[in-house]
Image (tube, rainbow, N blue to C red):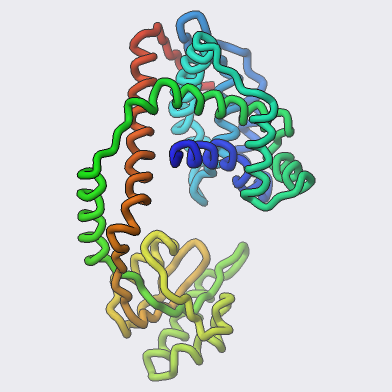
Length: 333
C-alpha cells in the first residue's frame, strides 16, 4: 500500500506543487526561440517512436516541477535532464505496449476519485485547483490524462511487480538496529540567528558590515537576544532570533554546516547563504531519540517494501528493454 500511496502522491502532486515562474528568464526566452524546430525521432522502441516534441514537453514539466538551483545555468540543467526524460519516455512506451497486451484499463470514476483525493490532500477547491494547473500551463484534461497514465502504471505494477517483493522479519530487525545506532550518534541543534537580508539591488558589503557589527556587539558581552531584536532583518527578531530545534537537511547548506560544526555556546559568522548574512548562536545540541521497536516496525516494513518495489519495478523495466529493440538517437536541438 505504501508504494501505491507514494507513487500517486509523487505522480499527481509534483506538477501541482511546483512554484510558478516569478519572472522572465533569458534561458526560457531562448527555449521559446528554439521551439521552432523540425520534428524528428529521438528514440525507436520496437515499432513505436519517441519524438523530439514529446521530449521537450516532458522536459518543460520536469524543469517546472524540479527547477534548477538558483544561479545555475538553466540550459545546461535542461541538457543534463534530457537523457533522464528520454529514458522515462522509452519506459513509458514499453509500459503502454504491456498495458495494451494485458488489456488493462482505468475507468472515469477511478480518475475522478484520484483527482478528488489530490484536491483534498492539498486543501484546494475546484477553482484553486484549476488556477494552480493554469500557473503550470496545464488544463484539467491534461492533468486527468496524466492521472490515467499513472493509474495504468500502478495496475501493471500490481500485476507484474508486486508478487516479486517480499520483506522478511529479519530485514526489518536489521534495519531498525542500524537506524537505532545512527540515531544514538545523531543530534539536532537549538540555535538563534541575526539575519541581514541581501535582496536584489542590496549593497553586499554594507550588509556584511552590519553582520560584523552585530557579531562584535555579542562578542563584547551584549545578550544575543537583545542584539537580534534590535538589528535582525528576519522574522525571528521578535523572538530574539530563536529558530528552535532543527535537524540536518532543514536549513540552507551553509547555515547548517556552520551550526552543526559549532559547540554549544559558540557564536559563529558572518555566514553567507542564499538569503543573506547570518550571525549564529548555537544554544545546545539535542540528542536524537530512538523510537521503540514495536512502534517503528510497521513504518520500517513499509519503507523497506517501498524501496524494494522501486528496485523490482526498475528490474521489470530492464527486462522489457532487453526483450525489445531500442535505439536512442541524439536529442540535442
